[in-house]
Image (tube, rainbow, N blue to C red; front, side, top):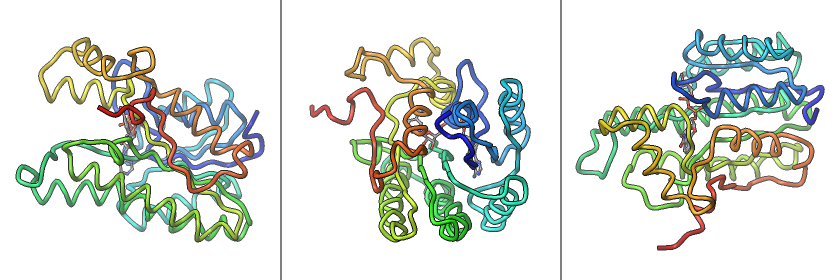
Length: 264
Ligand SMILES: NC(=O)c1ccc[n+]([C@@H]2O[C@H](COP(=O)([O-])OP(=O)(O)OC[C@H]3O[C@@H](n4cnc5c(N)ncnc54)[C@H](O)[C@@H]3O)[C@@H](O)[C@H]2O)c1
């Protein structure tokens, strides 16, 4: 019960349909298993409600809220809903991220760049905008952003990479600016994970079977030649959210089986 008596907002806690579980849903479930009351936020309310039901089936406490992180009024609404339903906000876990359609500058459409920066980077700024005043007043809080090792590794997807690198910088700025209020801000950079958004998405985009996609991704991971999964991300998030990480802020933590440490 490492999050006993805590209230967490998990944004992007719904799920792209697929065979496995996604990072956001697994994190919402693990937070609830560890005692947190969880506000499950997603643009897709039906998907958020599925996560809520899964938490309740296990005996946890959860409530759902629709919200698009790129819309300021939605971010204000879910921060307000959390206070109304649970009375406080101890943890903000920002999982939302999209990543389709960009390559190098020549091939990438302006509209793709705008959409990805809007959702991935502006969305991260807007979710914190309305949660930080609540945390400041309480004199504590833990914010976790789901970035990607794409932020620091070579990747020919300029909008995704730039948005995630921006997120790392945003988190460090928030960490420094809010340290005096007892608020911590940290980033998780997942590597190659066996989640629906990756496997189903790539399999469709490249017209390959899921098995072919999995084999190709597994080969790239130094630790055991195997991708991680959503529970690996969730467990790292649990640590950063909990009081065990009370002296840790401004960190960008790879959860990648060593991929970002490999040179060449
Ligand atoms: N799977 C990987 O290999 C991998 C690797 C690195 C980083 N990541 C990061 O992990 C995160 C996604 O993981 P997941 O497995 O939970 O994905 P997912 O697609 O299963 O869940 C993401 C949820 O975010 C929601 N969402 C999308 N846009 C939104 C918006 N504008 N406002 C509110 N909600 C929105 C979707 O409806 C979905 O339910 C992303 O930030 C992604 O960049 C994944």
